[in-house]
Image 1 (tube, rainbow, N blue to C red):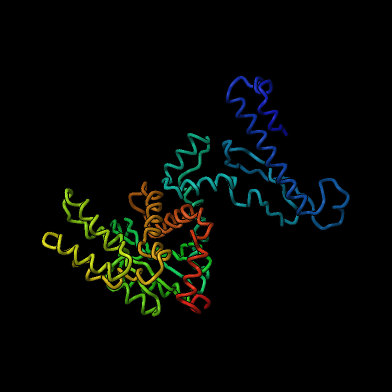
Image 2 (image 1 turned 30 degrees about the vertical axis):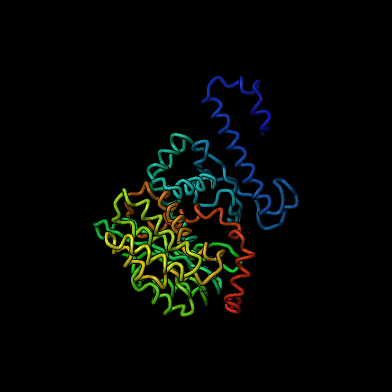
Length: 401
């Protein structure tokens, strides 16, 4: 084999008159390297090296080669795959019934997860890697994540989550020759070690409290016994739905959603002053001060934007749950920004897909986007030691179910 230093040596490169000659050489080197690895795998499988007398009377031996076309980063190459007489050899580098090196499969899945369409991936592989893989083959490769998604969706969960954020994101999906809106329901939990994790995704027709009931029931069936705090939007009936499954859970409505709803019809010239005055409500030191701030807000703006004040008063109890907790916990729960940030990344990765052909297609894309978006969720949230102590002090034994 040619070493990396030799490949980078300028005198060595001078022997190739064109880029095509160099590509051809690299293709040959790749081919030989793959075949050597496969032969090494067979040596390990048989328990002895080629021509070794240790193989006598072992009951199995080499049995020639089979031809295989392999799609790789160097284009399509012909390789000789060694066989054993008993037919028990299963190569790990290139499993049976596959025609692509695993690195290419990983690349395809990664590109798909980042939002590229199947046709875009096909073109990208041709232009950059000189690999011609049909859109059908690419779809088959991305479909292999289905089993991973099923296992992920049905994995056991922890018994207690300190906080669970819940929200839905709408996609256009083809259904019986029509394109309709369907909602992907997403739940993100903060476990007792301070780590965030996406608990699952569920597909429904539109966001409704009745469908959220099935989501919560699924979480319960997968092992969740208690949720201390839930953070949601102000969907009608959501709080009662949560309490019917997790009766001790406290539900905080997202303040950011409330601010948006309040500002929906405010004129552009008044919006800055309007939001500044409204900020005094949710940044108040306690609920009593927040209530006085809402009264002042109504005195100033009620004549023009009474709908905004009515929205705050209608949802006041659930909007102000966070005042029951210390500042460190308040910062975590009073907004669903965490799940909205996740939804934003999912949108980023799926924005090139104007609509999805099937329910499976949208679930596959969102699952891959979630895996891509949560790769860096490896550390506990900031100041978890302090926050954990506060949860213990407030919830006591419920933290130790």
